[in-house]
Length: 181
Image (cartoon, rainbow, N blue to C red; front, side, top):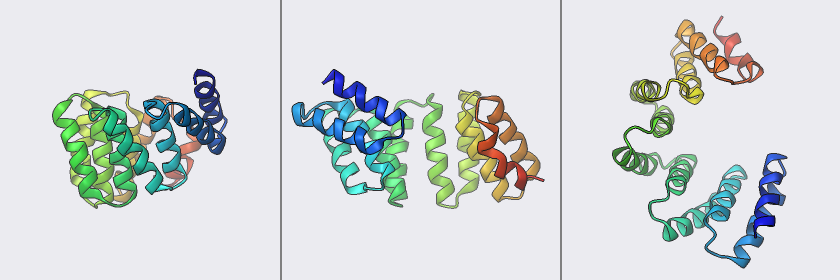
């Protein structure tokens, strides 16, 4: 099992998601309650847009550990991908009540709110995320994209530049920075 898990992780790093999925499946054939293999296979299924398979793995993971942070966050992401925004928000709201100091949860909720066209709510959550963790690049990226949608180009540019200073490759934001001009 450790060899398969390590190889699967390497395959993921190399972008060979299908080979990683096979190894995680082999682990689960041997040890059906391996939570890390369930989590990672569900993640791969989301990447492949195989949402029903991802849901099966997340549900199994949450059966084994109902309080699994990664499992609940993954399920919230899955709900968002399937455009079940209310369900996603319900999961995220419960998690925020339990751990109100977790900036990542506010960014996740802001992303759902953005998709629901509630940009003002998303901006409030992003402010809180940045207050809690000023080095969270995802918060600046999301806020920059919202500002760009709102035609607040100077604010968007400042957030994109902050994200770059936090390690986001400038090439990843080239298009957004061009739109800020």
